[in-house]
Image (cartoon, rainbow, N blue to C red):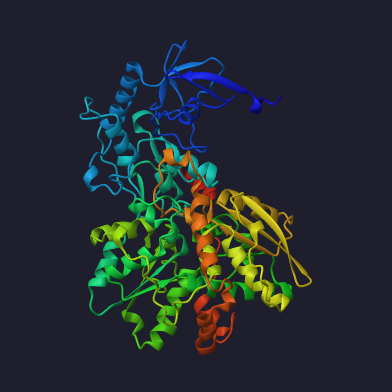
Length: 593
């Protein structure tokens, strides 16, 4: 019998439980409803036993043991709530709090902070220790991410997420002892390092040591200006997560209530970025067909994820020609709003203010790229939208479930646009259109399930007419590296590749609602949130981008044809190679040696 099939029986707080050999005490306890507190623990990412909040008594052991890393054995007896355990946890938490910035009422993570919640649970009412308090500079240079070392508890969750999940390693522990910090090498700014601004470090952080740059006030200022025509667009992934900020279960589809909240806030028009997702498929699909027919550079790689684009510019500059030249959907939407829509409605583009609600912190950096400037004025994350709704004192749960996006000129969208938010969604949406065009048909089966799912790298071969189109999907930059190295080595014979910077795609972007480490032990939020998008796809009357009548009208009245001259001027862009982080670190080392 394999070791992984062996079962062991142990006793925890007087309750007998049988679990697979190799299970940790933390996992075994959870199976019988015993909740052991954790702080540094993050399932499969940061299992290091560093914070010591999860200590328990093991019969026969001389000291308390960290349950998150301690494997069980047959006959083990454990006590998770003895006086010694309770006192140790409380003292540890008091020491962490002694030098922590405890201005909780003004903190963006107030009531959504794992440290604060743990303090409540353990009954911390005072701090008996006088910790070292040093006011450190806050790093606000990046257009997307703010790093506040005063709130860092040195748990390491962001470090291991950046290094082991994303495969980038921008953040690490520097210095020693009381001077230990988490920062990029040589304490350069996040804006100077080769950070891709994906925000996965923010998602991993249990406190507010990392957060997105807040742009809410800029949106309120625009809304308060009577001369401005303020338009908002929402990415598909936002509807799959915004409800979590108001107590709904993870994966609840909240499209109508989200629209109702935006209308109550006061936006002049509320549109769906899905319209532009359909537009992206028309441009990207046509580009792919052109490359296949005319022996262009293959494989062609999607360019919708700005975090992935930054990663490619820093690490694979020699493969930039493989990237689609298409802008991301919300940038396309901004460009169309300020030209076609403004022209049709006789609005001065200079008086139009476009706001994008995105699941992504990297989108904040995308809108300030010189080649993208002026398409979109402000990006707010899903979390920022939730804060804005609360500032407006809107009762979210009481909102109408029948609200719809504005429909004039750029309001229609298909199921293909909706699934953009899940990993594999862009690929599936593109295949639905490319299959019809290349095959000169109207296929009824539009679900390309081989490209769905949460495997790191997925491959599929699709027969389109007489052509076998080989595709791949990767999500998370660590997985992207695998595919890109294959291309560099000439081992990838794909036609088309979808790459997203975040694991799970946009539904798990760095701007989505925080999910506690405890909740992440029980479910995979990538799957739960993606379900909401596939549900909406099934409800749509049209599920192929080229079936969007308003898209066809846009080309007829304004753009001409996909990949035409006007389309290229408004909807396409270019990218440039940047210095890699390793090169920058080596230059710093030489300079300081």
